[in-house]
Amino acid sequence: MTGGPMGEIDAVIVGAGAGGLAAAWRLVQGGAKVLVLEAGAGFDPLEDYGLDLPDWETHGFPEPPGSRWPYVAISAEKAESGAGLESWSKVFGAIAPGPRRRTFGYSHVRGVGGSTLHFTGEAHRMHPDAIQMASRFGVAADWPVSYAELEPFYVAAERQIGVAGPADPGARWRSEPFPLPAHARSYASQVLGRGAAALGLGWQENSLAVLSAPYNGRPPCNYCGNCLRGCPLGDKGSADVAFAADALRRGGIALLTRCQVLRLETGSGDRITGVVFADSKGAVHAARGRTIILAGGAIQTPRLLLMSANSGSPDGIANESGQVGRNFMETLFWSSVGLHPDPIGSHRGHPSDSIVWDFNAPDALDGTVGGFRISPGTAEAGFLGPIAYAERAIPGGGAGHKQAMRDTFGRALGLGAIGEYLPNAQSYVDLDTEEKDSLGLPLPRIRSAPGDADIARLHVMATTVRAMLEASGVTELIEEFGSWDSISASHVFGTCRMGTDPDHAVVDGHGRSFRWKNLYIADASVFPSSGGGESPSLTIQALALRTADRVLAGH
Image: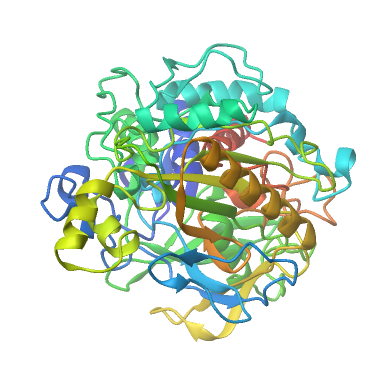
């Protein structure tokens, strides 16, 4: 496949998630001819998400065959300093007993839109100080791009998505206001705000890729609270809605689904000549383009590079530094859920409408480098319908249980914290030597072990969340869940780090391989640091737009 109806292909993009679709949109805007290969399928919001069904609560985000990547996760021993960080439930007891961290999975979606299909829509810029971790704080690595250089690309992404945010940007200075005003806070968030104020913490409107007013033909949010199950209305700016739809309307793009890339092919002059992929029927094809952009995420991008090893690159494509798969950073998280004495209707409203940024800066905590943020966690913990209460909050049965359900529903109140995860030698992604997928390819193998600094930060996260819930009026905790004994990653980063030194990085500041002149990466694998809890999708998209501009410029 070298041309066809579109003519010569300018760019082949592998992966139709946040980065791949943002890059495709920008390239099409610039007149390029683009082929996007996506291993998963497309989702029909009105048909697939099922929030209108009577049994909506029994379904999470839909998982048709092929919508999740297979992988192997190797659980590490729990850190010795984890007292008070055990995951537990009032009904079930210990959630992750035993000496090793329990693996609950790498939460992702394989399909058009990627994991933006099931996120709550948080649209965060990185804290400016969080991209200078090595030079300022002696940990992780510096980003080879400054906040000032990224800022116009943040603006472009926010405009296209329709991000709603507060008037005060805090440390994340802006050249222009958010496209839309912030969402009104739910009553439960107002209750949490009073708890934050009692502790002297700021409780600000969150910036969201969710429409607070009609925008570019899309309706505003109806506050059903079920962003994690998929948005049937199109008010959430998932990558399929915000970028793919517009790119397809413009033309110059072919988006092929259920096409898994098997390997990259190399040629003379340190150039990638194309990719080999299998379609839904198993037939193998080759696609060639002037530029190849990988956007499979921090697990699948290093897997593809390592699987593409050949005689000229025996350790994998773009792995001259030995850094492909290294520096893996998972989601460092803590969640506490309790019961409030009042009927606060905590199932209503947007699930992430507010946020505490007080601890987000890398130097916000005494004794440990790296920050965290706090936001509502009721919906993230799944307490949106009566079944969750019946199974996880109220033990027993019979008439007493029925009355307790009436008295308790809508009173669950949760908070979640996400924090910095520092790269370490024990956390990486490589190829499994035994397990293979349906095409006979080795599965990616995830190894992750939080370091001492991460566990110290996790203690502060848990303590602060508990204190804020207590100050908000929560009288009884019913469930807690965290990274000390559990792997439940949704934000993953770092396995193809960008930098300025080709001996210690995989790509440069524009996402281009140091060796392969036409190979770029546009996903979270290029992040040198994870940030202090920021949701990564907006930064992925800003970097992808910047990468696309470099490709259009012919460099």
